[in-house]
Length: 214
Image 1 (cartoon, rainbow, N blue to C red):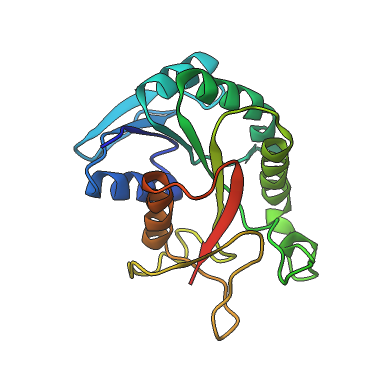
Image 2 (image 1 turned 90 degrees about the horizontal axis):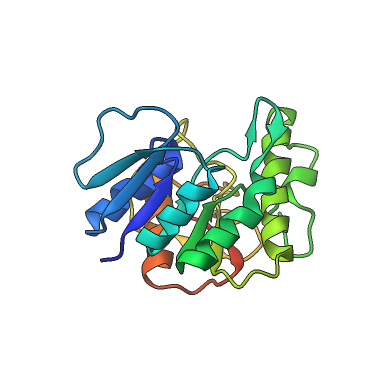
């Protein structure tokens, strides 16, 4: 099984992706900015930051997939989009695939639009982070890098506040928000991780975004 590096492995999405990778027998390199506690067996921990180009190149040479599961903004300022060139350069140099946990705000609420962020109901509290995630996706799509990457947008409801239960079932879409029969857009943490690992093990999206939901 290929080694998977997860930058942000102590977070909600990163933690679930790490757990699912271990469940499937993948060795995991977990990267955190601070000392991590209660580290699962099978995880090799490195302390570092997504902006460390040397670390990125090290990870890309040791892992078959490098997962970026961090916030795209910090203290109200976008930062991750500016790092996309170095992320792609490291992935290309090391021969690793890049997998990014994205946001739902750029998804279309219906074919042809509008985007979720452009709807009147979109909460202002999340706007900076949402715009930052959009900038990351735009930077990826506009890049001429040959690095292989995929960007996964969760459903509108996704996070520790709504963990859900593991079902093993999910649907995917390219750019349109997924909703269930009641009009809810939701994906649990474990099922999101299942979809993410399915893409790692059986790649179907290359230099592309997709979304996952029920």
